[in-house]
Image (tube, rainbow, N blue to C red; front, side, top):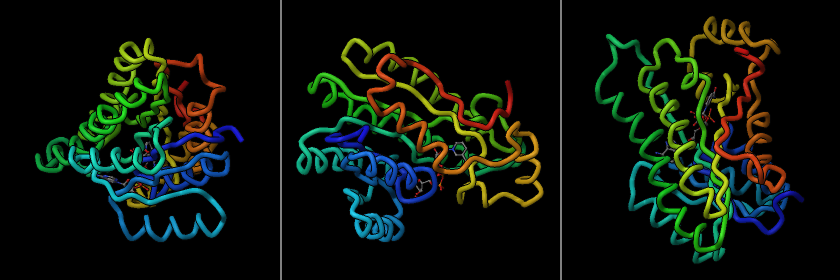
Length: 246
Ligand code: NAI
């Protein structure tokens, strides 16, 4: 039990990578708050995980809305008394090439993927400081590291997440808080399923392991960074991408 007694908030926890992380963290003994905008999936998945005996609670949140995030943190503290781990996993795409990108879609992706990460971390960090420590894990992407066709908005946010991770590592390390990021490669979730099939095949072909990632591949990296095994890993961006570029 690598997370016994720990309380973890996982944003975007109702689907894909976040959902795999909720299950994996609960298997390792954590009390998990599955924080997601998608109420239907959240309630369904919460029930399924509870049937398996896991300590997972769904909480509806819009990470782009500061009041909603404040209420999530308040309720979590009321129920569990502390927050040991924050996984800033919620994210969206609104893809288009630069020349075709609607400015509203540019902004919407910034609101969720960038401001959302800022909102959640700013709300949680004071409580971790008060408790003497914690683990914050942000979700970047191969797109943020290398750029990606049609993803001006998304790549910008995922590069920004790296900058925030390193900044927070410098600011919060002295307070006992580890801050790291995971940069997933192309992973088989609804986010990728939206893309045309030929693009998905092309994406898999550039991966050294010749396959897309599974949500569990990324969840296991979150788990490592949330556990005490990574206590001396700090300000790091862990690439979990099957070897896309080396
Ligand atoms: P997904 O689309 O399967 O799940 C994302 C979850 O975030 C959904 O449950 C959605 O309801 C939730 N969400 C969206 N907006 C929200 C908001 N405003 N407030 C709260 N929750 C919100 O996506 P996936 O693939 O599981 O992605 C998880 C993270 O991994 C994202 O940050 C994504 O950018 C990142 N990532 C994914 C890759 C992939 O190939 N699937 C590659 C690299 C990074």
